[in-house]
Length: 310
Image (cartoon, rainbow, N blue to C red):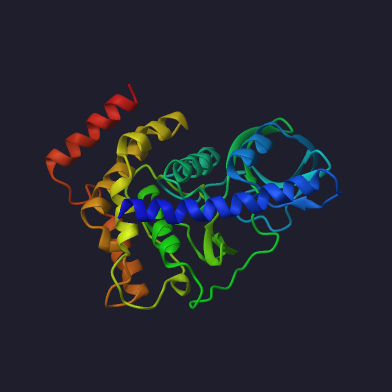
């Protein structure tokens, strides 16, 4: 089952990469407008976001609760469009997530997605200092967004994997405006954005997911999704979180959610009662601090954290 999941996901990424390599090659000879982050392969996107020359910074007229700016980065004759979220522009939004740390959580969530092989489902992020301010720089994702889901085309495997990812990172902010989409390799792929309100220092207070994006057919998770969940290495997740500067208590709850999801993956399935019932069910489970784990399981998590945070 795991081989099937990996070959499916890697096939999409290879197809995407071939298209982008051709596009970037053409851009060497032709002037072009600013590109979105989703038009650039992930390794190249990270390099450009981290080291590209910033040519323009201007206000984001569609900024949400937290301040953000649009940034254009030059590379050759083309420009990469990006979104900068400065640490100084963060405001209080959650009891268990301190402002001034959202930008780190943006980066940590993207790093976990990359490590799990689902980077194509999440906006790329690097940490960078711009105009004297530290913050998260994201590849621009919504120059041509597909904001309305089509239930006949939405890719079920990708949606399931993104739901699993959201539960592990404790995402309480996956409302309709934080989920975009694109057609990739003939599949309608959901793309998650805005991960500053993830990795809470405590239980997940509320699980959110736009129910219109969920396949309404009451079925269990795909075998490839179950294999994906079982393949997630808690030690690797912990190592990423400590490297990104995330608090140990936040990592503890992420690993507890992961352990529970491994034990009961079908909790994020639509099930017989539909998508809204699934969201409610996952929210109720997220509020349980110990996730119903045994003492042995909790101690095993603490050992992983001891090693990562030593």
